[in-house]
Length: 555
Image 1 (tube, rainbow, N blue to C red):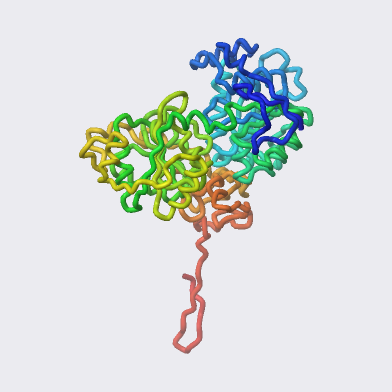
Image 2 (image 1 turned 30 degrees about the horizontal axis):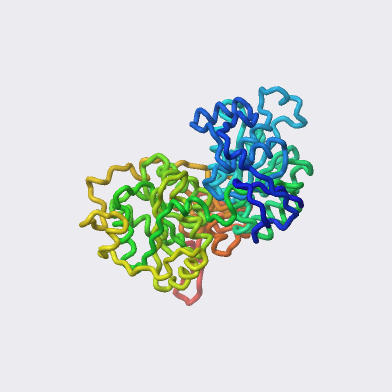
């Protein structure tokens, strides 16, 4: 694999340690960056330029300016960029530029009109949904049909949409492989393939599925791979499935990102019984806007979210025990301003792109430096200032010191902090006298209930669980799957259902697709008058008669 490396400053030198080991020809992108260019200057279709302009997008971000001239020529690309850098349009605009939609010249001459012409593979449902929305925005003046394929939704609507005909498929690996195996997804005409956040797909164990998907696409295709880092397995996959890719970096490899430079970082050693009280006071700091609170476990995320709502805050949660409908409800509420606090686990938050986040709170210490940067990178974007607060328990001090030493943060010893500590108020601009409950007069947002909890068909109609699930749990829950979807509405059932594949994979587990007790089998039809579920079999008991013998009695 030979790569051409493009960086914003055009600096030459050997690739960084996590870069693809290859013969590298460094070329400068400074000319591109110095010009005040627009999307039209790259020769992008007029309908796409107009659609972006309608949304207030007229000038490309650096990653887009570097990607467009290469991608529009059909060259394979390895794009190294973090979430929030604008990479979606970096690959989305070239992808849409090549797609031929119904009613456009050449559509009827396609070898298979209605079969997917482009494919985007993402690690999580939330990222897939975000990518699909961005593509829909950029193609609103064209008749491009875009379908989202991921777990947590019923199979039937997705299958029906594929059968009707689509141009672009966006989804997660597990559900895609499932539909490929069933013969519902045909990728033989997918001439453009995008792998978004490939390193996250590696972390979630999806690379084998991704390679299976790639093997079902044309041998000659346009492939674009985007990843924040380039670990060995991702490099190996790129070597096997890409042809002379151009390696594009959105930032200097030694720079941890402008988001960190714009983010004030505060670290406190907080005590478990006092952390919610501390958090509640932080959420009343002056100038506090949208806030994301990160937790390491699903249980903690649910508990903190519930506690904040009890204290009067407009809070929602995103974690693996929630069904897809509840997760999307929380995200809509945050985007629409009905809540301003989102409590999330690391896995569930991957791919969520929310603007104007002023504060990030690490309620539990991150696992490592990469997770720390990923969390605090949610604030301080697009030149805005942000604040990141990290709580460190006594047991987590060694872990934090390792993170601090690796990133050279200068906070090796977190300051012991209580909800009454004067420095807490002065550090974060919390008004004096603030307590751990939001006053009634300040409770002005609509909350989660202001957003409808959609019925996404999470129970489906299938009799066997797929790799992405999608049958989640009303009653006792249906089949689980590799991309989750086991949860029903709200939090699903706590017995068999309600757990998503992403979160379960983060715990080192993989769904085996076997039937649960709530799954119907062809020979399990209940008799007339009997309920479903366990079948409510009639029990028989023995009654002792007067002569000492026993007789059967229906119970």
